[in-house]
Length: 148
Length: 148
DNA sequence: CGCAGAGTGTAGCCAAGGCTACATCATAGG
DNA sequence: CCTATGATGTAGCCTTGGCTACACTCTGCG
Image (cartoon, rainbow over the protein chains, first blue to last red):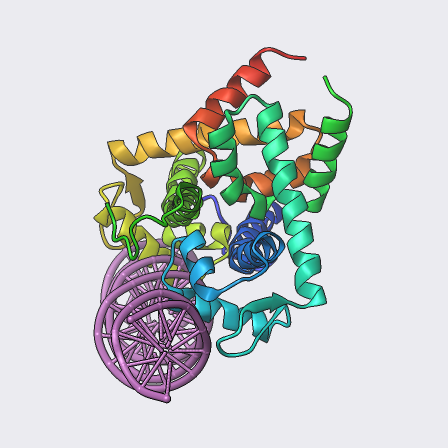
């Protein structure tokens, strides 16, 4: 019975921890949009075209799943797509993609700097990047700039 | 092997990337179980008791949600709980909790070593820890052991 | 020119992980 | 001892992100 059921006894530590988990859950929701934006930007840059099937194949999901996600990007004003034409990013979408791309690189570089093998670094970065705060990113940059 | 829609055109890079996303999605699913196991272990260690309501409050979810998750832990052989008694961990559950605890600490320590402020380190670790591979953890350990 | 087949889109299903609302249990105080 | 109240458990709903199945376009080639 460590916990008081009373009102005033709300431990701040408890609330802090709860808020942390809450943020982590929210980050998880943003991750999908970020991944799509980054991938679409990548496809547009390299191949010149971003088609739902390509996106789906790269992400390892069905094309239907990709199309649903693309619809979400459109709803959020990040992408545009007319039926049977490719997908494109709005200005906001490109800004997001760029931020994500930079963050991804930075996370990979940090992992490499810590001695993580390249393949593992790429793999882990895919999951980690969505949970790195701006504050941490800034720290990463400082760390890489000023080498050991 | 999975289904090739068209034989020769399957780029390995594409499959590699798809597999990475797939792993990240799987990690996300394991995260919930890990968080609960760690928290239950923590409550048992400090308070001596892990009650659904406490768990829910700490994680910032409703007690019903916590109870559902606890049921999952039971299904997976990680926890035991009899109605209206607290929750306990099986041997497997404790092993998991211990691994998670160590990993959490290691991630926080790495973030601190990189110059991330303490509060941000704790926050970010909550999300990051579930995506750090064993290979990366080993690298983190080496990095911390041999100080710059 | 027309059509086969790949690409695209739609519909409907599922599981997971949230929630609220309600019902049941356990227990501490009066 | 018995009841009020907080803790616990159950039911049912919602949303998200997967999937398959099916229908519709587009287009290159015969």
